[in-house]
Image (cartoon, rainbow, N blue to C red):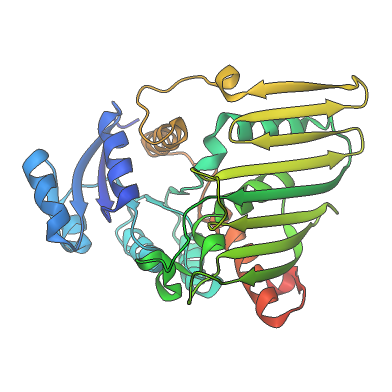
Length: 341
């Protein structure tokens, strides 16, 4: 076991700053360097954190700093190429979601990691939220019996005029609300229910020119469960992103959100509620939500103990295929089956 994991951060936008703050608070981590193209962002880091090396070119950081782990928190279009550079230097890496801008963009990285494995992780932080962890436990227990139908949504009040920045440019982000926000929801559905065998999707752009603002999709899983996903970043009255998943089974039903889990079983004929405050186990340092601290702590422990994260880029690739399938279906106005994903 390594005493202290030396970390480099590439990309000092919102997520880069978030992870830097959390990692600096963890006993097992030491942020040694950050890489960012904009001097305007690097200047205050040099002033406030003089012990951290600052670089305009991330390859310079990789060469000059003795790094055990790299965090990739750049715009999506840079994810896979930077990860390949980490792989070339045999450095474990964490990459923010989504994995890439398309399945084709991700394939070289997937093939390279198969040939030359390193410890890696993708930032699907919702798996570390107490309510979703509890829902996964309930679903896996079989108490609902055979799963029959689900309905799911993810909304936020974010965009009501033309968006500015890389997230609203398809070549940089890979897509709009589905790719940059609701990939979290797709990941939860894949985590809960397994591999997808067919998708059918519809998208609508209203405020955006290049990406979609609304998505409605049907997903069929290999186990036979089918249901719907609906998402938008242009729905009013959602100050923060909110996920809701409703699952109907042979013996009952479950509803889970960021705030609670509710389960009804025919045997007990009543609702049982679990609220996030009841499930909360606490973290040493909370910046942006406890799930981010748990996520980073898990990454550090995995590298320190030289073990797989269980949430690697292969999991991210499954999500990428579903997202691409929905876009393809919307474009062709036809269902897309698993061999096309």
